[in-house]
Image 1: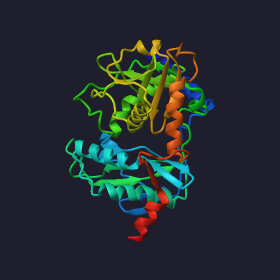
Image 2 (image 1 turned 120 degrees about the vertical axis):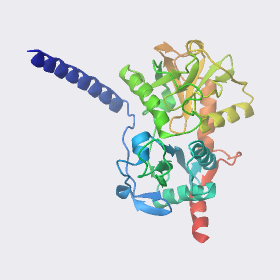
Image 3 (image 1 turned 135 degrees about the horizontal axis):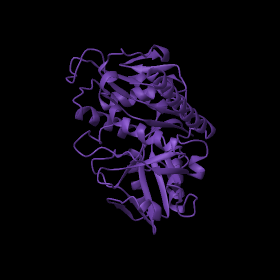
Image 4 (image 1 turned 180 degrees about the vertical axis):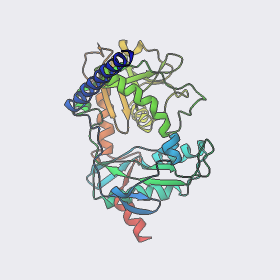
Length: 350
């Protein structure tokens, strides 16, 4: 009788969990959030172009067991001069720095990786895409000492539209402050873009979707603002742009750095400092930045409208300049774009 009752209870729990999962999945689809990969033809793997379907790693590779893979997310935009990758050198350097933190001996130079990224985009004949360099520890080591696992490098690319769903850039998104906190400094290095760091981001994101939000915003261990599930956070109040200081709980975002540069050059006052949660509720504007998210306005936090509930003027100004430079509609005065075809052609010629 106990067994039968327990089985019934477990079955009920499974059915409830399944219903919640399906509701969340239906909600994601209805909002146009792109949750699935779109295959392309080729992936760069250690100097060779391989077919998408031939990119395999062993189930017992160190990265599969322990999350010990470093990666980057980079956008390539269609421009009048052809496809161009935004801030490619900066992304590559951050990946190299992440490898140093985790004592991964990368067998390629920054120049090699810049060229490889351009080659894979060019080979796939795609103009607008997401580029994902990955440095993996492969099969060999069984435990915490990873050095018997070879270091392998893959660079795939694929089409990826608005990360937070159709209309997110124009209309903004609804965010909720997560019950999950970011890691404390000197635990898992937040400056390293390593796969294992994003398990916390998954919890933040899944909780946000389950609660009916588009995105989650996490606090640090001290209860101050940290970052989104995969974005940096900006707040506008009284014409001043605020963002949490780099404090060991959040990634030093390249899009974050881009927005800080654009804001300062536009004469917008910028402050990097610790920010309390309630600042989000008093803000005139809030927006999220990241390679995937680009510059996404936040229209409400915890169902409290941000300002007028529509994207504000400073958000719009910075978003417009960011996207105009990235797409070649405005002069690239910072030399942030790498022309894919020119770089790939140079590599072939040499």
